Length: 84
Image 1: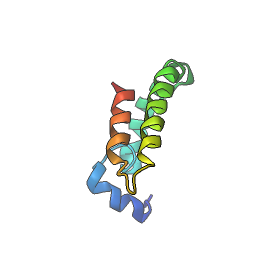
Image 2: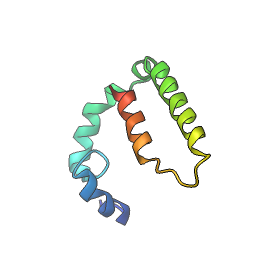
Image 3: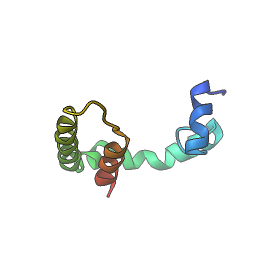
Image 4: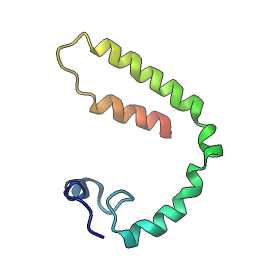
């Protein structure tokens, strides 16, 4: 299966990760990861998701006073806070 041109752009950034993989690589990887995203497991992380999201919202609310804000860094930091 040929993916859209969007994946050609993402491939140099993500390599052959889950999103940019071919179907042959994607299928066994997804099968391996699916249990990690079961609703019972994700439910345990809701408190962390909510706290980190609220922190990001507060930060971005302060940033609206500026003419320009680069949100890449705060998004990356929030992602790391959630993961770690």
